Image (cartoon, rainbow over all chains, first blue to last red; front, top):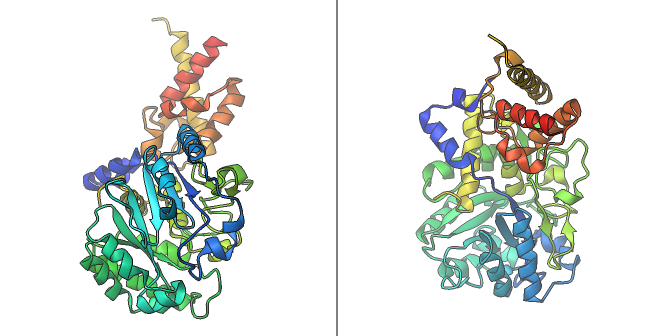
Length: 332
Length: 92
């Protein structure tokens, strides 16, 4: 029987101990149904989730709700939308109570005097051309000025097939802005022409992601095992899909047998009552879902399966470290 | 020297807990006799709360006791689980 101690040398064991007690319990919150962009491929609007519930507007109800979430054991609030920065009072209600991560398009700057150490993830969909095509404007030009050199901000760069061979230029721009970047893949929910992945393109982008990590280790927050998992949809011989996904809202999870999953995870709509099926769109085909957080969580909840060989366990540690860095549970 | 009956019971319970952990979690290359009762199940074997729930359900049936979910974080090795069961049996 393999144990963690039997598989790791001292350096790796210390890295393991640094993360093994974190016990992260996250949930996701739609802060608002509104957005100041309308991006093609945004699951929130393409699947009509912005119509799923009427927004709660009473800030006291938000505060009471967040207090209850804290009592429920949540220790990481992931704020999405819509665009959360359209309602900074709601963001602040989370920030004052819980470790908070705010996903944003970066067009409105989170005021750092009010949110000095809140983690901010700025969505980025490619170069200027792709940003204009998919989002209607070059959001990077604005967001990179707002957040230049910010220690608590990184770009969440959604790679598309159109970006193959063009990513390094973007990474350099991010590096020059003094920021970090995490990589994920587009799930082409709206079927935009030329933006669905072929197997060859997935192989190509995986090589490119690996190369970026090698060349820009201080800028790219990622791991090669994560690249493998997200581009192949395979982990330890298993295939990602509905029966494996860890990011299903727990009270709605009727799967039998129940797979390893995020404990107490719920994705809440902005009425603070409605629950969404999972961390992304309920209309998405799970077999082609490329959601980055779901795939890294898939690795993280399957720790025991990785205690088989030294390499497997090191892979698990690197993915967990990546997640912990992205939410500042450990330093960059 | 007289054998302390509680020690014998604790040993039997410890072996039973090891048997259940091995069987329910499909652990390989280990037997109840060779299972280190002090081995940290969470840190060293990667056992999580879902695994503990599975083990606890079997042990609850085996000993007709209730293992409170809030106590899971304290049940870090099979010695501690066995001692927990002993206490529950005495308190019945």
